[in-house]
Amino acid sequence: MKASVRRNYCSPRQIGIEQVEKPIPKVDEVLIRVHASTVNRTDCANLTAKPFIMRFILGLFKPRKIILGTDFAGEVISIGKNVKSFNIGDRVFGFNDLGAESQAGYLTSGIKNIFSIPENINYKQAAASLEGAHYAYSFIHKVKIKSGQSILINGATGGIGSALLQFVRQYDVKITATCNTKNISLIQSLGADKIFDYTKEDFRDSNDKYDFVFDAVGKSTFGECKSLLKEKGVYISSELGPYSQNIFFPLLTSMSSKKVIFPIPYGTHKTIPYISNHLETKKFKPVIDREYSLEDISKAYEYVIKGQKTGSVLINLILKNESTTKPKLH
Image (cartoon, rainbow, N blue to C red; front, side, top):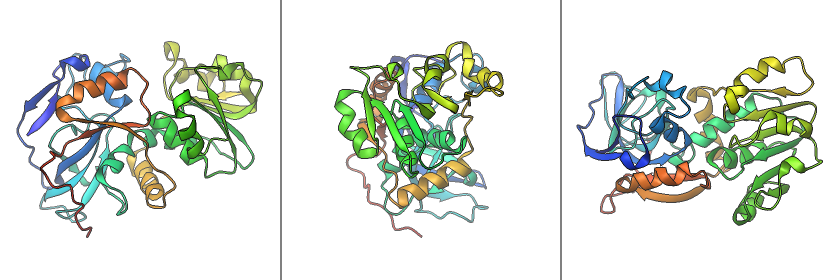
């Protein structure tokens, strides 16, 4: 099978497309034909080992897993003899921030790491709904959002931000979001009440006050946003921040009237059922920027690393002459 491979931490141009052996599922695993994956911010961190702390997780000198990819949507084509909860033909999706080896034709997975795709969702939508929404879930479940509160989302067009905006709008709150000029209509349609066009104005210069400042792109700091917070306000960023300050600030601000919370992610056993429910009930629709073939995956990584993507960037792993018809669910 074809797979996107890197044996060392590297730049996008050094990713290779290689023929590797199709994996064989263990007795408690399934074999999945991957239909779609994405290139996301987690993938880029896994590719480059930046920030450096990623090396302590993925492998200090070389990555333990050589095939790239963290999310997937596909079809179960074989099951281990101990698998009872999934059948051949089932449509499934999943996410593993440490690497699912999903930017390939096939992958194997334990049953605890895969979930049924809602019937009204296709493979591309399923793959695009995972990584950003997984982290967005952690933002809203680290705090208690109440009716009438004000929330600022910085970076509302990315994978995390676009999901976070849709999750937050289920509450009776006032939502302010930042985006560039071309995405104003999109962000309005996703539920923002007020928008800062960051190409023309800086939200940090505003006199508005918020109960929560959610930075979904990690391009601000607590120090810059502290004046925007109301008393008992909370700042959450998706990134570690300068000198990894967002790891330490939760402790340093624990007794303060304005706090920092670091959104350590929940497990997929909590996040993906939540995502699946919101997909099924049409409360969440993943935003898809563009699509690449596996052969052009280096271009996809280069585009995502620039930090200007809107929503998700898809990798289509099904050739044009292959069937993409949705199998009947069991």
